[in-house]
Length: 272
Image 1 (cartoon, rainbow, N blue to C red):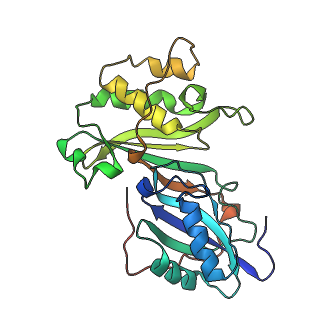
Image 2 (image 1 turned 180 degrees about the vertical axis):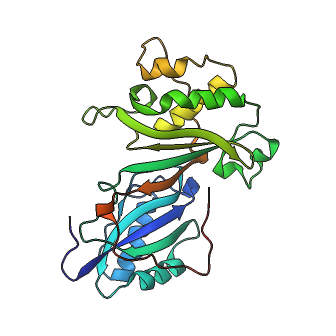
């Protein structure tokens, strides 16, 4: 869908704390990220605005690299809109950058990969109110070697049906994972995973199952058996949403934007 006449397509990189939202997607009578952006942009445009996102995040899930597009009156520039949003949006949503986009750019359908990050907090400090909103405050030891080994079978093209909360029979369950590895953040291990698509709650089920492997509650081989759809093996409960961040969205050359992003000198970019 191209931008209507006398409009320009602007592309936003959005960060948000998901704790105060019922997910990304608009829901009547519920506070959502999409709804919050649409309300603010509609006021600025003096007409209804539809915001399209690169993907949906569930209730409680955060983003440091959500990509969204909106068609605004041609009188708006990327820099002008960035300044306006910086002053009008609530404090738990921040637009990192605004770019002029191609008229046919679509943040969801043009995306070729998305990267999520999941933080697990092992030290006692993870239970602090200054951390527990943005990690799984697990606060128990894990076997680092087992955790690392559990991520290896995930890489490649597999059916992740066992790791999905809800079925997607019309699209199937096959996903191509190009990277999955555990590293360290301030308070414990951190999973970074990149795939062409994800099933509902897929990352959270993967993390919950891998953590159970690393705490000795199930064998390492269960990961491969679940990917092979062994009916005798079930996943562990999903990890909580607080630790999950949509970190980055990749696009091919044909979907590149037309201009450099506007800057925001008053704030620094959050990192995961």
